[in-house]
Image (cartoon, rainbow, N blue to C red; front, top):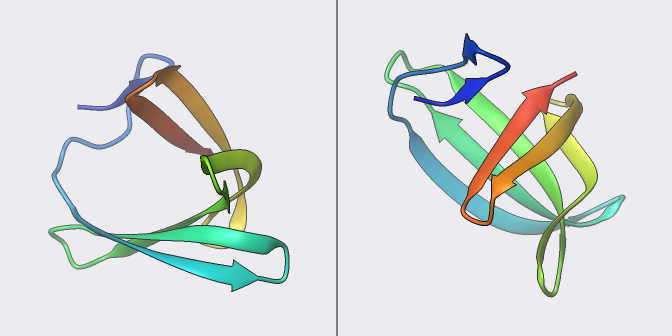
Length: 79
């Protein structure tokens, strides 16, 4: 269960797919998260040859923030 600032953000598993695109702000990794309810979250993260960056983060079109807790654990926060 992801926990951020002592607040449970979601406890369900989801189906994730990722596509790489070139948008107006440069290359992006677009993550589609489909929840058991059928709702969808779209996260766009700037990308570079070495991986994803924090210079461009959007959650359902709104500005977001990427937090890295460990090398293998990331969190995307709505702003």
